[in-house]
Amino acid sequence: MIIEGLLYTKDHEWLKIEGDQATIGITDYAQQMLGEIIFVELPAIDAKYPQHSELATAESTKAASDIYSPVAGKVTEVNDELETTPELINQDCYGNGWMCKMSITDSKETESLMDSKEYDEYLKGL
Image (tube, rainbow, N blue to C red; front, side, top):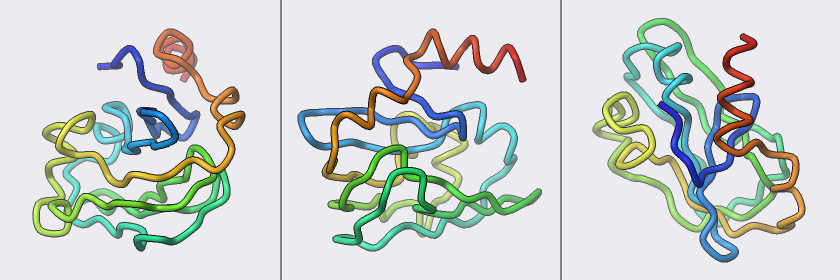
């Protein structure tokens, strides 16, 4: 499942932009590849991340996977529910399974991300 109106990375993160704020999570493809997610290490609030830097980690019964920051920014909120219920990512990766929110430092960085159609084409090539 790919949601229109979101932006995507080649590392399978999604980004929902509202003003200068971005909500970030992993895609349906990513959560399927990981399998049952059992632990999530979230970023610290107020921490600053450059684009493409390691933002969080998701551990599953199969493997651990780094989650990268789709854009540079400062973390303004994290989804605390994932600390006790990491399986929300498997159940609703685009909704209740979001990971964090950031204030975007440079909105031009979003130009390097894919829209839903581009991401769909990218997945077909994998």
